[in-house]
Length: 322
Image 1 (tube, rainbow, N blue to C red):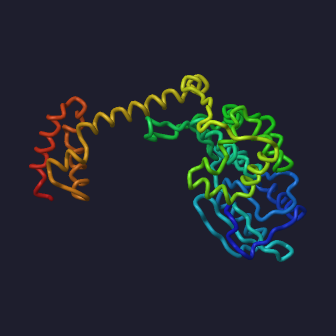
Image 2: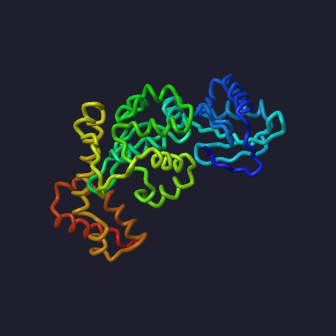
Image 3: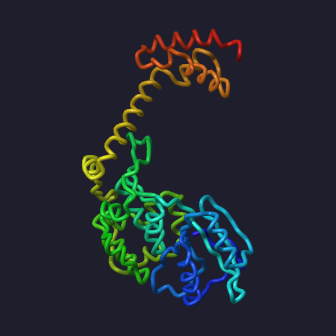
């Protein structure tokens, strides 16, 4: 999960890896993220960690820690095993509230990432914290709005068999078949040429992602013959029915955005610059002065001309400061 940070870190066999799994099962706050069952060697071990202090104490008590590295909420440890081998352990620090969702998202190697590609094409976002609706107004991204933190429900929305996922997977091929069984699956979602540069560069380096592309080709999955294959996205009304709390969040976000658009029609940097001649940091400072004035609280009730007059009056009041 943290990538291969230390060149001196070794791969270990399944038997030695299982000893580590058995050890971490004695902890109440550290949970090993599952890998497909037939994997025979491991370059690191990934954990969900619920308590940073206990994480440090547990690792220090059972291993000689040679080095640590932190990247966001992932803390990596280079530890010495009983056979003097150095090995990398990655701890993903999560709260109790989203630990179960995160564990299932990260389990089974790249399965969460592959499922997330379908979510994106449905206008949704699957993360280690939940399933989100990507709220856009045309091309303006307003907010990622939480739909559910129930992993089974998230998989149902994405067209996957959550009972099959809960059973786990024996091989990469099992994972690939599971992904392709989604009712929303299309080969086009995964082709590198259809990804943006960031995702294309990232996924080209992922062994399982490239393995999935090879598996699709070998098993006769063909891309669409149309430039933009049809995607049956869930409608807003369907999401409102399934997630009642989402409706209120959606409407509040949309209303706030519409209000801000109305305000910007009357009050924006270009209008203020035209009246005052200010630019850069001084412009930003004066805009904040205007927003602190009593008239700004009633800006929606004012005409554009009235707002411009009030901006000018405010400028006369404060221009000595600029």
